[in-house]
Length: 93
Image (cartoon, rainbow, N blue to C red; front, side, top):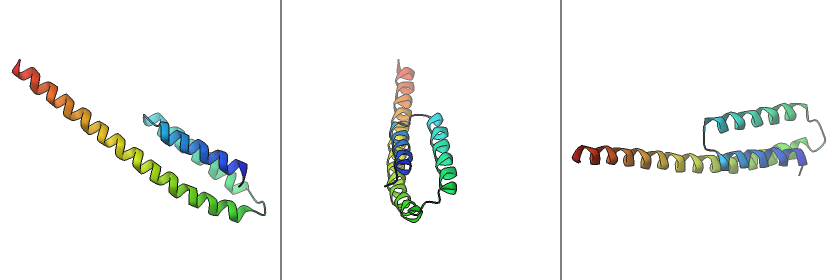
C-alpha cells in the first residue's frame, strides 16, 4: 500500500490509542486535515486503491475510537462514583 497513506493510518491509530485529553482530539483533527489535503492532491494511478484502503482502515479506526470512548466514559463514571462515596464517607465522620 502507499507509504504516505500507511503513515497517516499509523499516526491516527497511535493518537487514538494514547488519547487522554482534549488536546489529543485536536491532534487527531490536525492529522485528518493533513491527510485530506494530501488526498486532494494525490493523482497517481493507484488513487482508487488508496481510497478503498483508507475506507477500510478508517472503519477499523472508528471502532477503535468507539472502544476508547466507551472505556473513558466508564473511567469517568467510576471516578465520579468514587468521589461521591468519598463525600458520603466525610459526612459520616
